[in-house]
Image 1 (tube, rainbow, N blue to C red):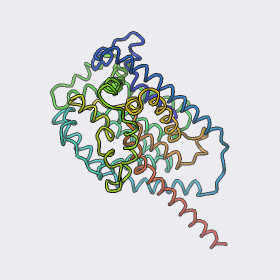
Image 2 (spheres, rainbow, N blue to C red):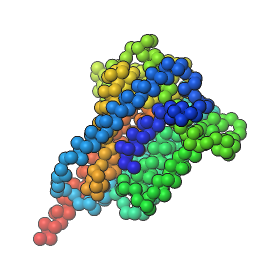
Image 3 (cartoon, one colour):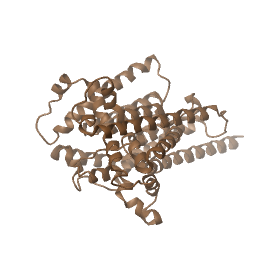
Image 4 (spheres, helix red, strand yellow):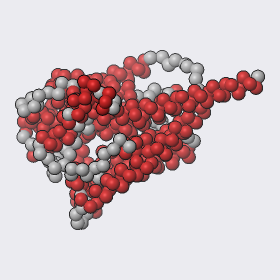
Length: 417
């Protein structure tokens, strides 16, 4: 249940769900990519996904083995209590800063969905966009930091709060983000410890809840703004395992369409989406030659570009596989997924002995998973700026506070001597 393993599993299932059903003789229904799209296009997309995913997994294994082979080096620094105090202090500040934007953004989204239906999400001007509202992600990071820096009671309350956020996002129709926050709550509650008898039941309950919640949210999404939910009837009539795979596997669609459009009707992006991600680190007036790339929807938001290009009224989502092919075609796309595996394993990996990693490392890994885990059903364009602004900056604050506590403690000891 390491974050790297969770990410790899989600990355696979969000593209392969319907392929898995097909492979065991089950014909997906509803939003069925396999039967709705041209068979040749689906086969091309499926083959590219499987090969590119092998490159991703090879990178994960190689990176983990290389990192694990390095001998641990002892470095004198702040004590465990210093780190935990710094995490709690920084986490509290993050919650205070992010609480109001979090409430404003979620209340607005609920109002749109309940009055106009889920499709209203995609209407022009339906979503309020403001850099200040993005501070809501600090609320999530703050909960993670307090859970990782506190005592057992802090850990339980932080995990409960994150689970509540997950349910809130699921209720709003956001299955991907809700699932990521639910797993984040589990990671905070267990602190990345190995799954033992006491934690196995919690893990089973998390997956049972997810398997029931994902199809249930699909029914609720379609009923917002309309009449009648039919939720209980839907659960009784459908196999939740099958519905979950069918629903998550719909993310194969962006890859199918990207491989149809590029290069037949559109040129390759040639790394533009990845460059755009870095460009968004900087304010507009500092982007210089990267200004045009950052402003181009095709680079800055491939999912929006595909929706507009296909004349769709709803967001089709996206996938790292589609983005890799969109930029570099077949061979280059597989290479991009290898690099993707190296980067995400480095980002989400902790030492085998979690206790030797220190609470800051554990907190940074879990916070990173919470914020960028949804990139399994998106593109990398938001990963770099999100990590820098909402994980790295708070992490640096924790390190500075911990060092300050260490020096303060040292001065008190010296004064006493």
